[in-house]
Amino acid sequence: MADPQYRLEQIIKVLRDKGHRITPQRLALLKIIAKSEGHPSVEQIYEQMKADFPTTSLATIYKTLTLLKEVGEVLELNFATAGSHYDGNKPYPHPHVICTRCGQILDRKSVALAEISQEMARLTGYEITHHQLNFFGLCPECQKAGPG
Amino acid sequence: MADPQYRLEQIIKVLRDKGHRITPQRLALLKIIAKSEGHPSVEQIYEQMKADFPTTSLATIYKTLTLLKEVGEVLELNFATAGSHYDGNKPYPHPHVICTRCGQILDRKSVALAEISQEMARLTGYEITHHQLNFFGLCPECQKAGPG
DNA sequence: TTTCTAAAGATAATGATTATCCATAAAAAT
DNA sequence: ATTTTTATGGATAATCATTATCTTTAGAAA
Image 1 (cartoon, each protein chain N blue to C red):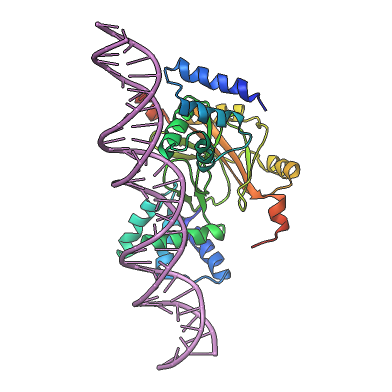
Image 2 (image 1 turned 180 degrees about the vertical axis):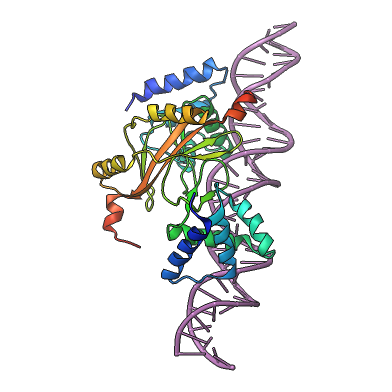
């Protein structure tokens, strides 16, 4: 886990360098992202934002997250389940393990997909930019709860 | 590519064995799925269905696809781009290469993820049921078209 | 035939995301 | 400083895939 303060400055720098403004609202969202340990959903970020900015609009959350995604400082996770999640600490592809019942999301160390990715590019002629590797199943707790 | 006729009978058998009815509408959809070579979207399936059943409802398409997914005879692909796609010929996890501009979807041979999957299960205590491995980028044609 | 139940079809509802439009505030220019 | 320009915020409507609801229909069994 990176130091939230350092991570925050890192993201700010990237935004500044690309000519984007650091507004109070953005700063608040960046702080949330930088100190987040899991994979907060839009709704969760929205809730936290309202602590600092009670009038924040969901539209602003979406716009800022889209911006962060574009500059590569956040990783967007979309599974079949409704609602995206965001990882602001490891904005590069890495495997996830997702519980299909409770929705828990675990991070895993990156499997060696760099070579495989290059192989795919070579074979298909694609210019590959990123990838997803997700494992789905039941977490230990949901297994205990039994089928159904 | 499997023989469409054989694949069709295969799916029918699974549905019958699990006590589901083979209605004319379902049969029509199964034929579409069995002979499809790519990864048709709901909309594309819907269009083809209308040839045989002009009054087919989208709801029926969704219900049948959900059923096929449940019995494991179709693989559902959801990427960030809106709209799911379905693979009725290789209903087991395998890698895909997706063009983020034109939406082309390529199948790839399965990478050896079985061991990795087991390793994930061992380390996390999860009961892993399936996985996704997707590579994103620009296809050769879209590369030619240049950035933008 | 009659009965029972799954499935089809029409349509409304849902829910996440995006678009639109105006107000505002930050940076740039004068 | 003041003005000008432009990005951003906020409110809300629109979009779009998917799901839920409800009624009708048809397949299978008795």
